[in-house]
Length: 159
Image (cartoon, rainbow, N blue to C red; front, side):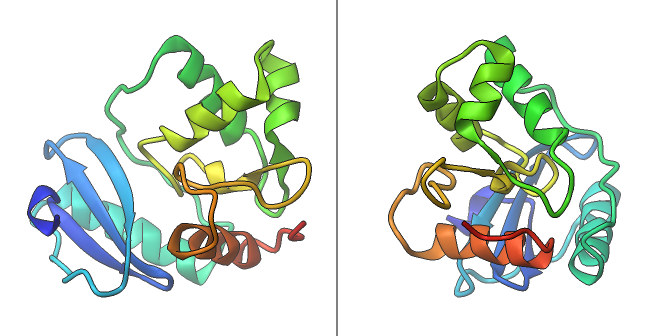
């Protein structure tokens, strides 16, 4: 698994794997703590690391990174709606679905396909009945623990 990442960065909840082409970020992936870290090898991953560290220190820190184009038009609309949710707030899959004329399940699928979590804060989208899933994982465990950490860090009220 680690060989597929250009950097594996420490995070308060585990690690973050990063794929880049040196000019744009192609993927950010949550990884468990036991995965061996790999230092950034280029300026872009160093920039991401610095911005992540700033975010861990202050949830109001902003990301300003070149992201590779990704996703369908529908996914882009969902990710744009997610990006509009302010720090400390949450919204539901249904609310986003209503705003863009879609079904909540389709919004959930698009959230799970988000290649840039943290930067596009899909953790701010929850179910009408609770925390919902995260990164296509609906069962308690690592991914929902990451979602809970991110929401607590940002001061969001957990449902």
